Image (cartoon, rainbow, N blue to C red; front, side, top):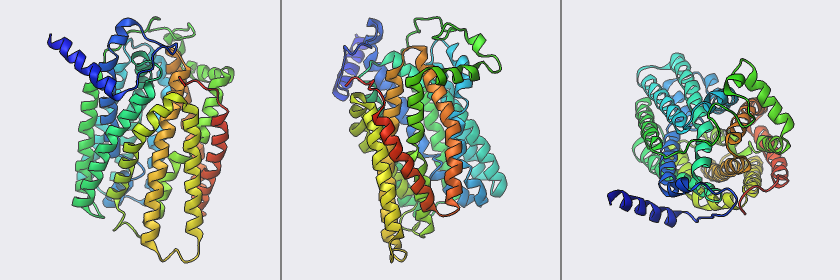
Length: 454
């Protein structure tokens, strides 16, 4: 009776949170259907915990502040975002054959979450015991391992969601997870602002990292309770009939990735459009850099930017979750357009005569710009995640996610190199380049085929 009551409660909570859209042509088997409410709540909880942990090790805000507190050479700061983003994407195609051997993909996510927990705990230890160049090198090494763990979680999470949640409800699950993590981020940002002020010591940031490590441990435990069905095909076989052993040869994964991009036109168009949507992911560090250069850190320190990020997540969840289920391609287009428009506004205002002396005004503008760009970036991420899950079936979904992420790792490094070079001429040059890239991405996203439930 207790079990029945628990299931009924989960069903009521799920129905209150999610608008169910069944009969979309991607319905799940009966046993899986019965587990949807419980699984959805577990996925929301685990994703919220992971997203909350991300706030403690954010490469665009927290880690640069930590490097400054530890006296790490400024040159090493430039490696934070490339290692964090590309490091989590590049290995995915190579790891896919190994992931496909795992019958229940949730254990891949659990492994990735634990790797991230250990990596962040190591960063906390370094922050507490070391300084200078050695601290920077050790943290970058831990960040590289962290990214590998994120790689495993990224490959598996969309596949588990596709197996356990029906089409038309996946975007809402992602949205609810984002909302929950936003609440945590706001609380964290306010606490940092109240207790840390404009400056935070290395010891305080070490405790912040330790708390993030604990969140990943709890996320791993929650995810391990998901009732995931086994895939209908044999777990050692890919969707093309080739065995994972064959694909796991030295260059098998590379040949497979190239062939997929060459032969699958819809997938290739998606990857091309995704590469043009980097405007919202690469611009926030430059906005923070502008704020620091205006000497506004006393008023607009780390806590304020974390609060802005949290508020954007809180709003983005309910705002974009159902939007993604209706039309994920439109969500990507709208997000890229808004981000590009904000960057253009920042450039125009920044170049206006007389604004150099209004540091508080400019700082407020940059916090607002950071908020809007991170808000729409959350929408862009929801859109592309929902799009790739909806456009594929079975193990093809795992391949799509892995290959697109590996390709994006290369593209991100290249684009990051261009923006870094332009930034030597001035931050506005880098922001202008990203704005133009985003406008082109808007056109590409609109031209993608519709795959959402509508």
